[in-house]
Structure formats: C-alpha cells, structure tokens
Length: 194
Image 1: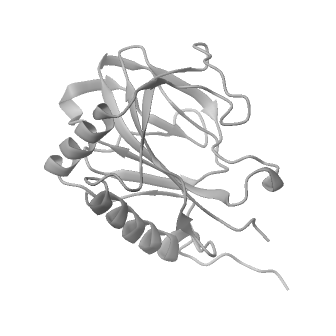
Image 2: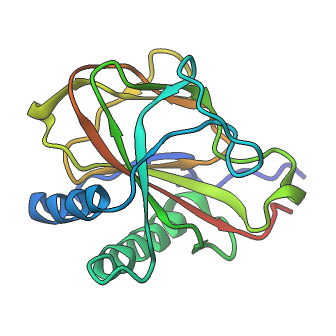
C-alpha cells in the first residue's frame, strides 16, 4: 500500500494576511534594537564563529519574559499552531527558542544553509518549522529576498507577513542592495521525527 501525503501538505507557506500590523512591527523592531546586539555567527551554539563569507547581519535575542514581547509570542504561537495544523502536520510542536531580531545592512546576506541539525540527537527538541517575518516596510530596503529550496525561488514578503518552512529545507537571504532589512526569525520544535 502506498501512503500519499494529504493534499494540503506543504513545507513552504507564506501568510496571505499580515501576522503583525506596521505598528506592532515597529514595537518589535524597537524591542530588538534595545537588546544587546551581536554580530551573527554561523555554526550555532556548538562552536559558532563570525564568517563574513557566509553571513553578514546583526542579531539580538528577545527574551520570553520581556514585558513588551508577550503579545508577540502569544500571536506567534497561535499562528504557528494554525499553520502547522493546515500545512505541516508535525506532532508536539512548541515555540521553545527565543525569537531572533535580525538586521541585514546594505551588503548583508546569509548564504545557503538549513536551520536543523541533521543529527537529531544533538538538539532535542528538534527544530521542525522555521519562520521569517519581515518587520521593515518594503520601501525601506531592496534585495534581501528569502531564496528557498532552489536557486531562483525568491520570496519577498511584505511588512508583517511571514514565511513558514520546514527547518530541513535549504534557504538563504540574498544580499541587501539598499537600506536595512529588519526581520524576526523564530524556530518551532518538538520531538525528533519518527
């Protein structure tokens, strides 16, 4: 017997309505900018390093208990659960990592990478769904599209819109050619895939 995926199954989902209003995007950006900035590294917690041939951006981490962040986290959980139910169908999903506020300056980029470690034993809970949400108004930057799965498949969400995708899919942020691209990156995880 051949098992077929449900017709609704999709591993790349762009929201059709904004997750956050422009005013909410401004609040998230203000919170992100108020926190200690870091030059983004590659390689994660297990030996990460700055590598300007792979990634140029600045990040900060938004704590779960930040007083202005709770409405953001509540909304992200709500949207993730609905998106997972409608498109991914992954089990036992939760938001278990702090959100990453990211700024890509002019010339900033992030080369091809995956957000999940292929050795699932390294990171319980396992990252299963990644989300990128654009905080900047579209007129404030050029370039900076999210190229996902294959070269040429570039998604440029509008302000407040998000792209959810399986964390095991290859993706990159193409170079910003003008302005600053501000975004919110969040990972949702759970038990290892069975």
